[in-house]
Length: 64
Image 1 (cartoon, rainbow, N blue to C red):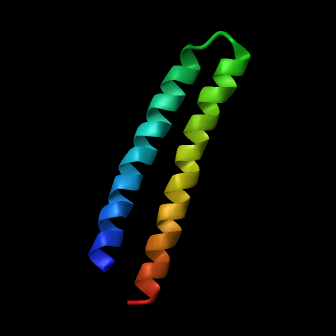
Image 2: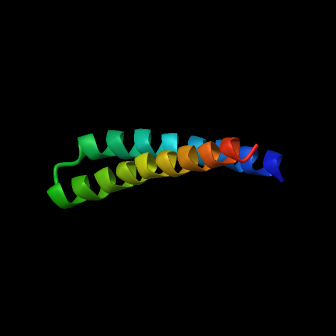
Image 3: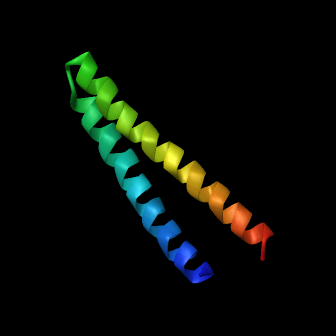
């Protein structure tokens, strides 16, 4: 079970990093403030996902 958690954790980290990078790049190019905030929110969701994965792996390590 632990190897499954580690595998999914890596998938979520890659998705979060991609979302942060892509969201910020697209947000910078926007001229409409609403679209800029929307893409910025996507990037912030990536930051949130990194925190969730880090907390999950910390809990997994403490139960080892």
